[in-house]
Figure (cartoon, one colour):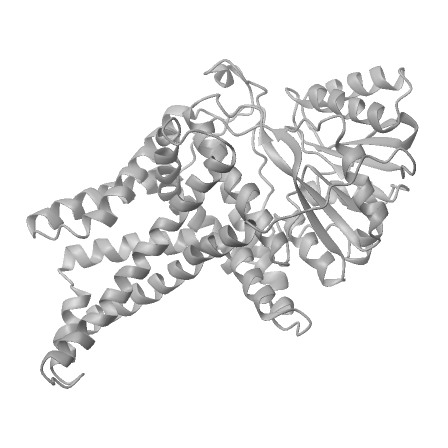
Length: 513
């Protein structure tokens, strides 16, 4: 066996095993989610502890009024005298004037509302939340991002859980979507987010695993945040980071699937790539930071540590996808046949030939490998279909959205691989790039007239180059009658070209960033 072929075979086998690990985890959480139960607590008419609502804002002029109005309704329902609203405004555009306007309007209506501004945007969202934490006297903190609209009963339904359990540190509600049906892209992205909140979060909670606060649509106990070290800006996933540190201090996280908190979905591919890239970089940077302590913590059960590893390193799936595409292209161009090479080796100096026994042992690894590939390939589809069924949504009507979702999964893998590399290979603190919100819920192209557009950058060129490489590999594979590899080459190639071209079509020069 030639060394390049051996290396190709070894890498392919390792990638397949890792795919299987993350793919099989879908099945594990899907099974665990069936046991999800949280005892409902009635909204307390008695003890209502004081709450501070923190609203981190950075250049959000289209949605800031909507957010503040929703929070004042929430305060009215819970008790105006029991709620303090802090608008954490780091804006450097005319959002600041809109913030002052709406804050002044509700101050005159006797709401406890305050605008907090810093001299610089140091630490980004984590820095703003930490600055607010240091000036908060209330024991409980509710956090809502600019694009969310908390329901009026959010605090009434969530605070009783904290009153009942002194070791409850975080309560997370379920994200729903204001603009799910805005376009085909938002319908596809919505399914991907729903998988997390319908399967992953309930599954982790039901199985007694470490969980995460999603950064918005939740309530935190101030004492728990302080004991865990507060908000720290050394990752781009301050919510994930704090969640794990808080649980290592012995506090619990509870997930309420029936406590809904709607927010906006990015209506453009550039916004989606920006969001996913930040999540990829942030989660893997968090893994670098706290995973060693988790794995070495003997107080945690083995499955808790294993699941923490899978959870925190989940975005490594994108580098694995990119590597598998590159390996397949190389194998096609150079005519490598890892399976054939292995069989030749085993017939020679490897496994002795004892008649049919050798053939069985030669074929068995590849039958098992093929089964593993099939299972991990089906896992996201099974999770998506189960999610749609749980939400009572028609599979037939959402088939185009499902197909687009998996096309996006392949297509953004290169962008997320770049972000993952930044997290793993660099110690630099990267900028927190916000996801644009346009408050466009009806007009299909209304976002085009809005500011905060994301420039296409250069990643689309790399995606297009990968698409061209895939087209050449497809041509070579057909010429060599290697039709099996088309199952890998065609989805990746189609996705890279699609995402690249859509990025250019939907992007224009930065404005108002």
